[in-house]
Length: 231
Image (cartoon, rainbow, N blue to C red; front, side):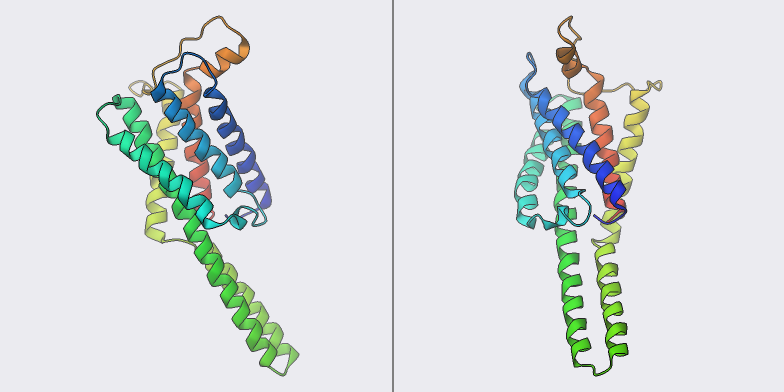
């Protein structure tokens, strides 16, 4: 991901906190298997996004297979669950959303790795030309051109049409999710059956709050939108 370091740290903190909360929800009592599957999917995506958003190129230093294998497998599982008739309508929709999100993680990882390879090749080629040139001025100009070319290649990572479609999808999802959370008429949230808030500990009530899974999905959608925009 490219962009100001402050944005990267903010995304890392927000996505990491969201992923950890979803991970902790796996420990709550009384949750059914369908809810736990959604929690696990959201935890994986949130923590993965937190690492990918790390500034100064730290996230891009992770080998691309580390992204492709787990998120590719998660995408297959989520899409299969979303198409299964054994799931309720709300669960199917959330699984399909997560399937697209996991595929988007694979897409971003591959696109950034490809852009990084092109940028490194461009810089290496320019350095060779600068070494052959006999004038320091020509070397400086060539070096500046190589750095600019590499930066342009990295900033333009991915396929514009696909990136635009994913931006529209996640931006729209985050908007609809926000409307549901504030209780706009006709936009009642559907999903993983509400966990009644029992008079237990504060932690138990927090982990079982029915609104928070919807908030997590909205936050993850906003984070994905921001990361796609910064590619």
